[in-house]
Length: 310
Image: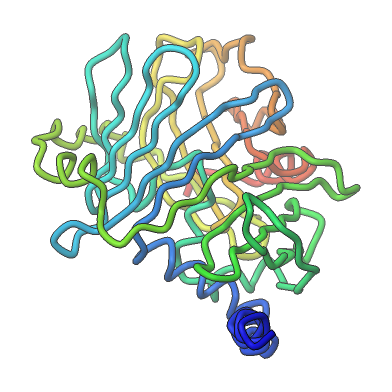
């Protein structure tokens, strides 16, 4: 009987201590865990027409963050991050590196960043608790302050604060995307694969395309919290010509804007919406503007219409 009471006490004390945590504190603990802990996640990414099994490994080698992402289905496709350099390794093309603080496509970069920066666009609300991947999890809802973006919810492991499940939801609560952890291993030291990745000589970061000096685009309207991250030249899918490219983000949602002078570049018909992506095409003066992102289409239309040259 005494043993049973001791076991109950061990599990009850941490839960009682967590009762006083605000939803923002839960998310801040998650941010620290994603940056500082050694762990291995086996997870499934669910989208409208895709189910992708993935493995994500994270740790620190000589005080440097190292991460590895492996796609388990289809042709080999991996990504390695050492510090702020991400290298993509695919079977049909040479490896290449870019500057990035996180490996995109697993969890929103904001989850491992400054949670306070999300408050201009979202509010945080605690939900219930459930069991995921054999672990007790706490739900935190990330609710948009307006109708220009979607909502999110994340379940956090109550012991490590690492995410166990992540959902993206439309305004009418339809599921657009889900990351579901099926196994989480919290480790005491970085796995050997991360140590080897740290020692490996990866390709140098690719130089950014040069932009025309006179093409300085200004957004006359953006949803609260959205900022310009990147301006350069991109080859749009299905096009052989480079077009002007601007990346926008509020930390959770991302919008890609492509701009081409009318008649100079044929915007490809192959660019279609799927997996929660919306698309808007607008003619602004002498330019065609295409905006793509996992936000409501009305947001993309307004962003595309509000662009102008400074």
